[in-house]
Length: 213
Image 1: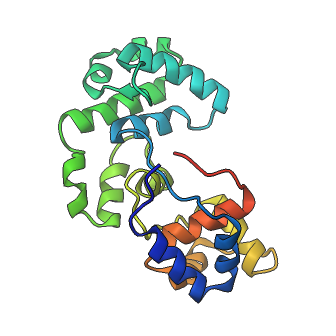
Image 2: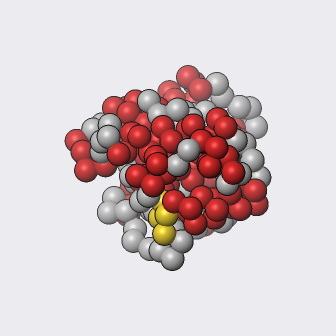
C-alpha cells in the first residue's frame, strides 16, 4: 500500500532527535500508516465497532453493507444516501442497537447534506476537522483523531487519551509510570510535526501487527 509522502522524512528526523524512537523505527522496517476505505464507510465502521467484540462488529457490518452498500467492492463501500433512507427499525434489524442506528443515520445525514464534505477537508486544520467530525452523534475526539491519522494521513496528531500510547510512553520513557493527558501532550511536543508517526511506532512496540482503522 502507498506510503504517506512525509513518512521517510518523518522517520529520519524522529530517529535523529529521539534514540528511543530511533530503535523502534529500526526494529520495524518497511511498515507505515495506510489508508483503508472511503470517508463515510470508514467512520460508519468505527461506529459499528464501538464497545462490542470484533466478531460481533464484523457480522453486523456485513449485514449493513449487504443492505446499504456494495458488498462486491474491495473493501466494501457503504452508501450514505441508502443508509439515510433506512428506518431505525430496519437498521436495528441488522443488529445495530437503537443508539448506533441513530448514530449511523446522523453520520449519513452529515454526508448527504454536505455538512461533512471530504473535498473541503484539505483546507481545514486538524482541530477544525476534529470539531466537524465530533458534531456527528457517536463520534468522539478519540475516533476523530484515529480518522485523521489513518484515513486522512495527517502527520501531527497526538491522541493523548489513547491507552496504547499512554502505556507505551510509560514503558519506554518513565519506567512504567503513566502520564496524565496534559502532561503527555507537553511531553509529545518533542515529536512535532510528526506526532502521528511517533505514536504509530510506539503502538508498534506493544503490538508488532500494523494497526488498520
